[in-house]
Amino acid sequence: MPSDEIKKKVDWAIKVLGLEEYRRRKPKNLSGGQRQRVALGRAIVKDTKLFLMDEPLSNLDAKLRVSMRNEISKLHRQIGSTTIYVTHDQVEAMTMADRIVIMKDGVVQQVGKPMDLYEHPANKFVAGFIGSPQMNFYDVTVNGNIVTFEDGSKITLPDSVTSKLGGRQGELILGIRGEDIMLDAQNIDLFKADKQSAVVENAEVMGNENNLYFTFGGASSVARVSKYEVSGIGDRIEFVFNPMRIHFFDKQTEICYI
Image (cartoon, rainbow, N blue to C red; front, side, top):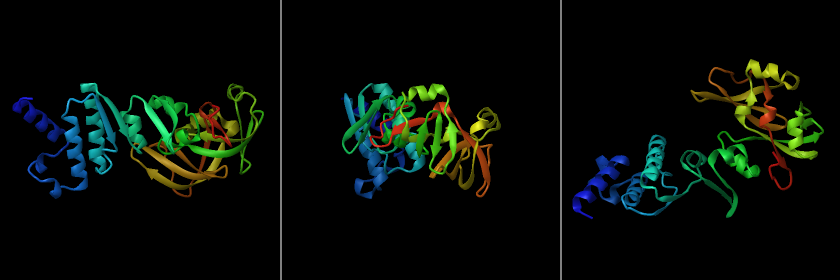
């Protein structure tokens, strides 16, 4: 490769990785995160058909991780090389992948597009791994259309949901994501027959949204609500489950039925 082409690629990688001020430093004088970026640069300047990246962003600070996620995604689209990207960070997996392979103890649990795994998890492990905050899980008893929680709370399932269960009754695990626990007046009025209440134990103000933590159904729970739905610690909140967004898992195998 001509020297001017090499320089052009090196300059591009240094700029993308934010290493301009460290250009003249030796590796021994770099931090762990900076060395990680250098290693990433060595990989991306090559016209390779296959990349294998093993947690390449793990030592970077939060701001740089977001930037590098975007740059690696753009790079992947530009060069068209197959990239196998190993990570424990489900946000990286969801935002960067065309297809995700979720593994547990060396065994593949599910393969699919990010939103397919989010909306239709194969089992409880996948459901709990994908999504932040994690999906809420409850031990329940299903009898016909009635779901009873450990603390005695009950909700009624629509026929369309029970039909998907295929007649399965008894002890199951109910799963629901935080954004499907509704606190707004419109949904509470819509599902008022199944309205529940709890006391807020902790609140995370995220800016664009709020996470409210409380105990319900014998389990720790979190509702992901709008930034306009402000509740403080000790406040009693009323909420409903969106019945069309409920998942059910087998209690022994943890396979997802819905």
